Image (cartoon, rainbow, N blue to C red; front, side, top):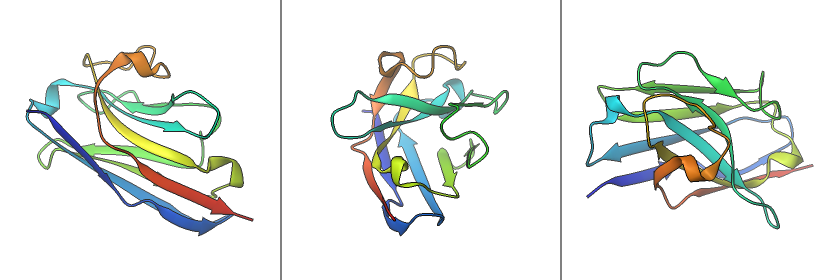
Length: 126
């Protein structure tokens, strides 16, 4: 059974930082790309960052590029999203997900991911 568990969400003021972590079990972690997807009320889930099985190349949506950093540790089966210079518009539920393949093609599409965590809420206030 595949399990994906996020942690690290919370509330922060604009300009602040948060780090999200995700641990995966039940599959060969180093054979899959990993993504962070977010969903705010009224909108569909959208991938914002993806890291392939071997860690390169990394992809960021324009909305977070330069502010967020994704990383993974295959020995610990974890993926991390460091979020900096947070904006009110970053408020959303953030999901960690296992992509269906090793690479990050079409990472913005929620349908590209097979296994999902329950998500963690990030709220940024002004």
